[in-house]
Amino acid sequence: MILNSFVLIGTILSYDAVFTTVEFNTNPATNGGPSIAVLPNAAIPCESKVGKKIYVVKDENMDQPTITCEIDTQ
Image 1 (cartoon, rainbow, N blue to C red):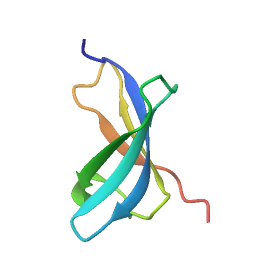
Image 2 (cartoon, rainbow, N blue to C red):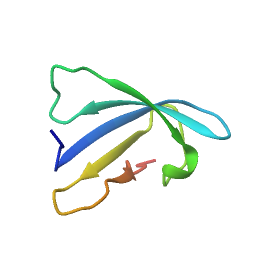
Image 3 (tube, helix red, strand yellow):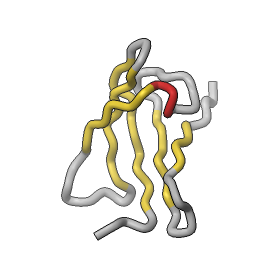
Image 4 (cartoon, rainbow, N blue to C red):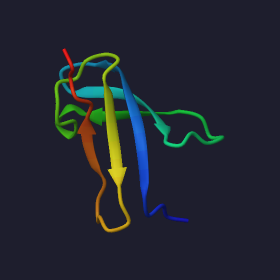
């Protein structure tokens, strides 16, 4: 089964000069629990900071998912 539409909410756990480690949860939450991903820093369109949220969004009309970042309110 291929998901046509989804939203993953990721929290940055750690990062270095090359990679960022992110814990992802689905929205809404499901029985599967969180997953861990290691992404290249170039895939994240904002500054990596521990605790920051990123979102991976794919709509059924999109060919590829997009990664966006939470808005800094400070």
